Amino acid sequence: MSSVFYRTSRTYPVAVRAEGPYLWDREGRRYLDGASGALVANIGQGRPEIADAVAQAARTLAFVHGSQFSSEALERYAERLMAFLDLPGYRFFAVSGGSEATESAIKLSRQVQAERGQPQRFRIITRRPSYHGASLGSLAASGMGARRELYTPLMNEDAWPKLPKPDPRRDGAEDAEQLRTLIEQLGPQTVAAFMAEPVVGASDAALAPADGYYQRVQQICREYGVLFIADEVMCGMGRCGTPLALQPWDVTPDIVVLGKGLAAGYVPLAGIAASPELYRAVMDGSGAYKHGYTYAGHPLSAAVGAAVLDVLEQERLVERSAVLGAQLLDGLRGLAARFPQVLEVRGRGLMFGLVLGDPATGEAYPRPELAERLGRRAFELGLITYPGSGAVDGVRGDHLLLGPPLSITDGQADELLSLLGQALGQLHD
Image 1 (cartoon, helix red, strand yellow):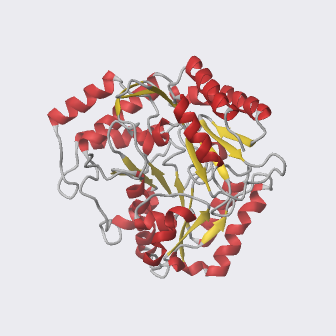
Image 2 (cartoon, helix red, strand yellow; image 1 turned 90 degrees about the horizontal axis):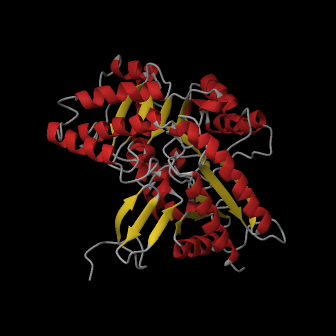
Image 3 (cartoon, rainbow, N blue to C red; image 1 turned 45 degrees about the vertical axis):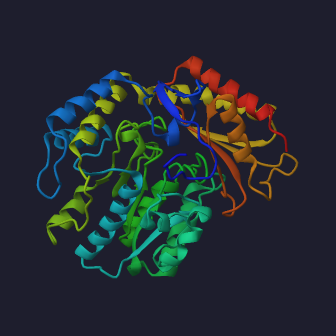
């Protein structure tokens, strides 16, 4: 009998080792990780250079508390990371996970507005659907009904207004005007920030708006004094073929939320990058960011983050994400042509979404279970995917998210397509 508190009542295989994009369980079965866990293990597993970085950092400086010390590892990493992301002058606040990073962005935006003499600004506008994390604040910000429903009595819903998701079929700038309308309805003087995933992850796989959307969003936010927060926890760090997913739109947010790929799963690491204007507002105001975590700025995590940057840069994995992503996208569209349950394929870099539904109507099934069944069948065949539902109305809408490691080879990409094709071929309505 296990002493583990599992996430569900099902029986989990026990993983014992991993190498590159593969994992093995203790029964000897091999799995190709087509989702990098939850789009985390971006450089593949089992890299000796990362293990060496962990060991060296642990020998040198295991822990300091952020209220007492900085560390050389954190100082070096923050400088390198901001250069990698092309965010000159931005300041990096390091935490342990994406939910902590989202909470940090929310609290910073609230504090900055107060420091600017506008304490009445408390609302954080997000979109529906969206997913920003599992902690109470980040979950309140999320527009993902199934995950937040149980906890809504604990939330002040008035603080978390939701905007409809972008529609890539519409004019992007016109679509973004919905943000202006909502800000006006709420009262601009009450809105602190707008937060969005540049390319949506778990709640609506790989959904991106039409060109012009984020440019207009930035314009609207500046016009109303609303901070723009880009949640790049899942889509950032080269996943979409550029260091930040937002960069192809030539938009620079006030705060960037980062996680997952920062340390690529080797240690917990996430954080926020805040503009120099926001940093000055805090330090010239009260002089202290009224927030913190025990493991914020952990030196070992920072050292590993730097080692992951080494791999990304030396192996040109961001560029590879763009090139191989285009090839895989073509392969996925080929599968969609063979299997009518795949209504749409979309993707940027090595982040892909398959929208599933009724081929007779082109709409979602009334009961959201197709993605789960496809995910289970793929898992049985040795392919790990990331199924989800609720993208249409919180209940209906099946989709499958894929995001293999950026280091995946051409042959392994072909294997992914083959296994997914087998799973689709064994899926019955």
